[in-house]
Each structure stands twice: as C-alpha cells, then as structure tokens.
Image (tube, rainbow, N blue to C red):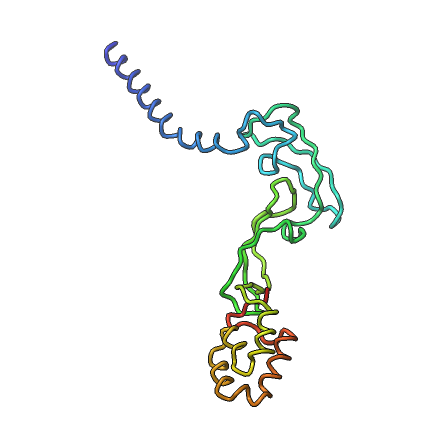
Length: 207
C-alpha cells in the first residue's frame, strides 16, 4: 500500500508540472507587455495600464479629475493611487488629431466610407470604446497636381494633354482630333480645372 501511495504522489506532481507548462506561454505573453515593466513609476503609466473611475454624467467639454489605480496585472513602483484628468467626451468626440483612422483609396470622390478609428495617444482618457467606426469623407490623393493640370490645359490643352494627364483618355482623344473643339473645349477645360471642378479620373483630389 505505501508503494501505491508513493506512485500516486508522483502522478500528482507530474500533472502539476504539465499544468505549469501549459499555462506558461500565457504568463510570458502578459509579462512582455509594457504594463509589466517593473521599472515604471505608477504615476507615469499609460491609460491602458490603469483602471480609472469615469463619470458619464459629466458636462461635455469639461475637464474632470479622477482617481486611477494600476490594473491587477500591472507591475509598477511608487504610490498606486494615481490622479488623472480628462476631457468629458466620448472617444469618437475627441479632436481629429487624437484619431488614427484607416484610409480608403478605392472610394468615389465626395462620397463617404466607413473607417475604423482608434485613439492614437495612450495617455488620453475618454469615455466609451477607444476603437470605433466613423463615416469619413472620401478625399484621397494619388499624385495629381492642380498646378500641373492647369498649366497643361493652358499650354497644350488643344491637344488634350490635360485630359490625358488626368487619366481621362477618351475625352483626351476626342479633344486631340477636334483640335480642342476649335478652342472652345480648351477654354472650358481651363475654367473647369481652375475652379477645381474637373478632377482626376480615379476620384482623388489634387495635391
């Protein structure tokens, strides 16, 4: 019987070792984050490493003071009660320079597209989700210069070079063989480009 007990103890120890090995990758992944840097001072932690009490009943645009404390998985030194202040606004209401949004170069000019945005400064505190979606105006650039298009329209517009430059090949060919519509088409294009009405074929805006 003592022999059986001896084996049982070893079996329990073996299973215990297996359990440690299985959970070890998770522990390593957590320790590799910036929140587990033991050299950090608690008062200098980024927002993602803190748990703050946010007041959702605050007045929009008002500066609010709050108490924060490090997350239970965060290692830091010094006073754990951290004072922070934040602007009473949801994350999507912050000024544009606080947002990083995914661009879209395949949308049509003057249309709107759904963009994934996130708060780009980890020290900025805001209400709600830090990652959100918002509709943005489709205004992307692809290298076309307004000054170049206007210069080509004035000097070589009669040969359709301005239209070719903007990627409008069919109109360019028509303009070339009609000698710029005997000058009328050329004059119209100069006005359209000068006012910004005539744009590149891909829907982008001028540089």
